[in-house]
Length: 268
Length: 264
Picture 1 (spheres, rainbow over the protein chains, first blue to last red):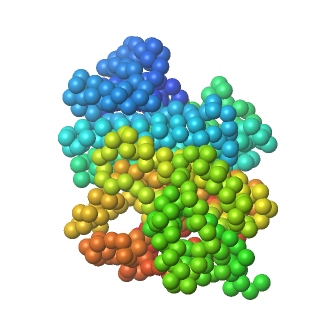
Picture 2: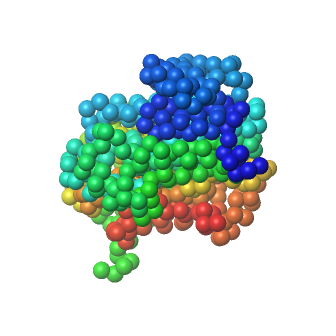
């Protein structure tokens, strides 16, 4: 098999949650470029449907949007069962959906318990449960690749200087839930890789750094970029290669990894 | 100052949350041996009293017990208030909840969520509340998050050959997640506590010898450099070090205490 063929996902069924925006969008585009049949689960189904039409038009792949709500367990169970009913299998699961547990008032050290609870219930518990549901299907197939999202903020602590003395930005960095959850993801992939390995299932995490968007604070961008080896924030393309690697047979001996995709931020 | 005096915890007060969980007893005895006064907190008053009684028989007197059901801000704030009222100071916080993990891989969402409400949300609320008390004193304080080696590496299937009960216990839905979550939480909390001269670290213990089957023990120690499981003194030594001024330039780190298991 050529190296290029190893990266192909032709004939493979991929389920991605949160695949419409930010890093998720890049991940979906990578799955489409590699030729996978894609089921795109989204909280914002109308926007997802627009994206799906764009993918069909421009990439010529089989892709379908499914509405789901990670805060609703029946919705998660329905999502996984729907994909199994329609496609008969799940070869790749990209678990990218995360709610942002903000908007409850407290920030930083005094983060509100409601924000912590949202994070633990929706981001952690529901995500672990969803991995289990997909994992059961993959066990029956004796194959599969689970890719979940950690963060460089699950690998290192606070860099005060990135916030340029802006107390509001710095307060956000002093919160509890994001770091705890993302650190858990990094450890969980090793744990799950050990459990699922006997069934031919691989489990890995990508730990991206800050993604540049039109909302990025310029002070943050300048200060943060100084701490990367490549001198910049991530762009929309940076996640595509790592997704294609971990999803495909090109990564078939990779499991239990948390790969930083952060321009070298965490290696200094 | 003599370096050995830096290990002296005389005049320091420690709170151990969930001391009834694995490693708690050894840490409590170690801190008291080094001169600290030790308080307990946890939901099961009878279990804490039993543990305090057992320690007293060895000459280790626990200074007080707080009944505390972890998981809500009200409970965490009430614990903080009780600590301020009863303890002369709060110099050392030992968060020892991670032993309360589930058993078995396949779990319902409700069971996972219920469990993580204690070992994730509850831990954050405990650290938030007690951290607030610690930094308000203007003293050097130390937060110790107790975890185990699964925070750093996955459970090796080899170790469970002939040890199905250990496999059922360790390959649980939350085991690797919860233990590993404390690694970066130590770094994160170190960033905040550092602004106030306080520290935060995590300990990744190897299994304690009395808690595992003979088959697991035989398999596991093959993968260590020091050919045995951890004993009580191994558990206590690192806790005293991180609690004391001997480690005053160490913060945000996770220290494996596992006989070299994760080193190879």
